[in-house]
Length: 354
Image (cartoon, rainbow, N blue to C red; front, side, top):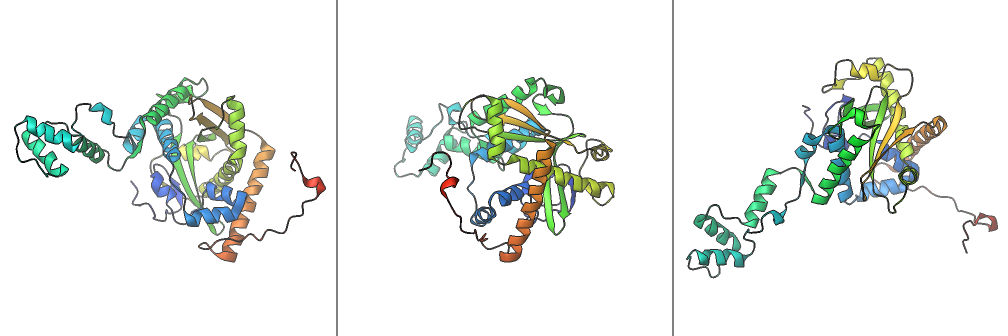
């Protein structure tokens, strides 16, 4: 659909159906994660960006949940697969010993010193239907080339989460078989905010709202409301949401002025016009899904207008910090915040410190 590969600069515009890897690999555009990290600690952001971060399975699980819930089963199976399950083949030949025993049972001679690959070929010559675990695994990997593998337990968790959302009395009416059907999924937007190329990817764009699906694995058990509140505050989700709302407003102005191009297929011809028609800011909705123990959902409507305004100001300040550090040190060197010395007096101790 798009003549773009991961790592290519994505032209400015609004995209329906842009591949996730193309979106994330744009070499220039800064997303809400950058803004949040610069707000929290600019030096840490730059250090981690330059030194790289380790791949974690939790990212794959979150991406699988996004595919299943935001786009449906077909999107999940197109991009993900359960890992190879050897237990499905209890009678398969596994070791070199298994292969040689099989060949001896079929009156084959001269087996001494043969490598495993040669023994596999020999077994298949004797019986083309023989089950050999190495062969079965290779066929499985070939059939699923390019897919992300997740464990059987995570696959079951994703499906359970989808059905839990479907049974939710508020979410169920806008879903079918555990997937959203209203609005448009994974809508990507690229625009210029002054001299900085920006990007955002709305999990589910509705005419009146931006929906953000968040999977989280709390370290403790307890009431979902308490756990979700903690996740929002601990992970600075409010500044990410404020950045999206601010960006959405800027893109709305560009769209209404006819200054933004649209790529891909909208749900229907007037969809974006309806999304950008209102003078009111869209509602921000988090859909949290707990991925530890029961994958239950909780909807959060962010309605605090003062907090939204305060966090939009934090976004502006983070962008100014980003511009400052880039101008001082560049994009390819560590940033040095030059913290002033801290005075710690008698009245500054809290929490029983000794």
